[in-house]
Length: 231
Image (tube, rainbow, N blue to C red; front, top):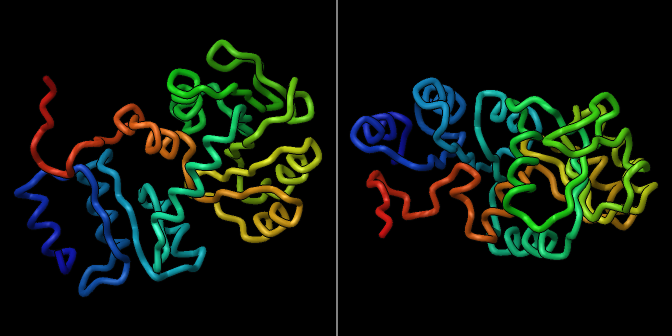
């Protein structure tokens, strides 16, 4: 489709499994388009692919319900190779900011990792005691081992302190979840010898490389309005 109007018409006739949209479009822009789509369908994944690289645009996109945001030009092969390599090397993941509330993203990620991944998963939250039947640690320093990946579910302003704690314990990778982006923290982490992933979901990326996107809430078949049949 060349415009949001054409996309609306197509959506009335066809059920799509994924929507990929630019922000800069004739007439209705991508933000308004995504808001309308989200008001009609809370579950369909929406991906922005755009040349707009400013934080304000990314923040606005995520706040209105976009699931992912990629900046052009995009080298998908390199992106997937790098993320896949990090996930293959890792043996343990510490979820910082883990929540015991089923409605929180960290809880959904934790459920997936415990049931569908080989990682040893640790929960870090100074106010929680138990999540999914597992003990919760007050800090990274309290963990019984150094985690390979520190998966962060914390506010933007808290990220520098999480980085300091990650460097202090010797973690290898700092992973900021979908919607989380901090250039200064990324530069400091790389200067300390850490790998950095920003604005990505561990659950989705692990499922992508292990054929389990259906477990993560995505249809891995051909993008089509037709239901995939299983024999």
